[in-house]
Amino acid sequence: MSTVAVILAAGLGTRMKSRLPKVLHPILGDPSLLWVLRTLPPALGGAVVVIHHGKELVLEALDAWRAAGLLHCPVTAVDQGEPLGTGHALQVCIPELDRLGARKVAILCGDVPLTSAATVRHLCSAEALLLAMDLPAPGSYGRVIQQADGRLSGIVEAKDATPAQLAVQRVNGGAYALPWPALKKALQGLTNQNAQKEYYLTDAVAAVARDLAVAVEVCDPEELAGMNSRQDQAALQAAAQRRIQRYWMAEGVTFLHPDSTLVGPRVALSRDVLLEPGVRLEGAVRIGEGCRIGQGTVITDAVLGEGVEVRPYCVIEQAVVGAGAKVGPFARLREGTDLAEGVHIGNFVETKKAKLHRGAKANHLAYLGDAEIGEGTNIGAGVITCNYDGVNKHRTVIGDRVFVGSDTQLVAPVTIGDGALIGAGSTITRDVPADALALSRAAQTEKEGGASRLRNRQKKQTRLS
Ligand code: UD1
Ligand code: CA
Image 1 (cartoon, rainbow, N blue to C red):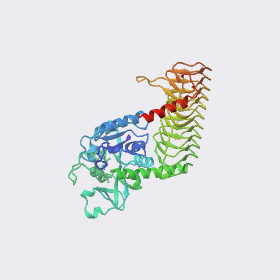
Image 2 (image 1 turned 90 degrees about the horizontal axis):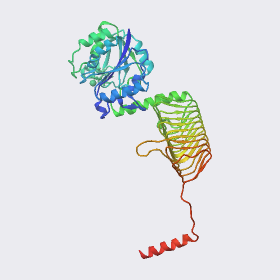
Image 3 (image 1 turned 180 degrees about the horizontal axis):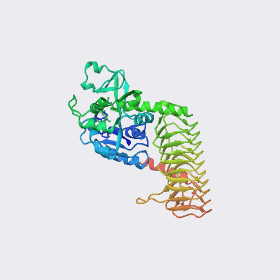
Image 4 (image 1 turned 180 degrees about the vertical axis):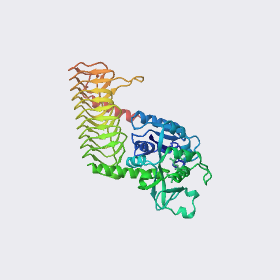
């Protein structure tokens, strides 16, 4: 009793001139195939992806998306073997569609990323429907031939069309909903007697249309545009960018320079977020109310609380940033960074698997890796957690209200107690108790007049040489 989606993704994509299968090329950070899979209604009986070229990479991607919870219905894959046409792609799905108990199939292309979820929902709820578009220059698309009452009569591929058929501007968008028993029967009767010696799905659709009414609906061409070349990819990305920015602007987000700002489809922004020029937000990103994201900043898979200020040129990846924190300019927050409210991370500071509690500060030139840093603690300029001994990683734990002087190396594993004070330039290799003053550096000496004596010696040496 269920509707099953079939997503065609076996093609090589010759015109992309790439090692990567076409359906894995990204639009705003997400591969084309993921855009398609994310539009599928959760109520579907499943989705079958037809793969062949680059199938290992596609299978790997499907596993990763499933693990990340990005697939809302069960998705399986079928290897088409040598692709012999879109009809052949469906023929190889017959056992899988029967296994899934399909009553109806909704067919989409993995290289058509911008079909909206609303359109896909509509397609999946239709009995027998083809999505078309009206193009002034219909090029190589299949031409849609309709009966007087509008229902589908046939689809003629451009390479097989007569001049009169070529003049038709209504073209096949490659998205269909059809009853499975009727389509299955038509697929079993397909031949490849055509200009391309391919098994055409369009011939099977026309055969179904001879027995029952297949409706034709015309969509916005942007929704059915395919990605066949790098130029298509750029055009689709620009269209997606406009669509996403229009949405967020209506929700109260300012884009200082929309053309240079890229916001992916899985990014959630809030009111009064301000994005400066050249910002790129990709993957699963959430940004709280009133955040300002500085010029040239790249944020991937991260959550920012309210009122965070990210100054220009930061890279933030797999990190959590608490409300009111200040980051950058030129900071790098790597995987597992967790900044509490009001933390300050300044220029040229790198953090990785580092938890900084409320109000902690590391304002200049530091590396904090595998570390926990307590409330109100101040990390001086040039402080480094030496977390790696060449074989294993070790943790540094620093308590609350600690002062770590500039240019200190903390050789992990090491623990610094609350309120401790570490003198500048120390190399700390042992735990420091709470409230202790720790210093580890050679004692300083002064020689009176020593500077002049040294300079004179240096001058003499220069004359001799
Ligand atoms: C097909 C339609 C055409 C329509 C156009 C637009 C047929 C015969 N023609 O054109 O009417 O206007 O799409 O979408 O269907 N694929 C496979 N296995 C194959 C062949 C293709 O999985 O053996 C996949 C491709 O990877 C792609 C999709 O099917 O995702 C469409 O294939 P493509 O070659 O781009 O379309 P055409 O056959 O030229
Ligand atoms: Ca083709």
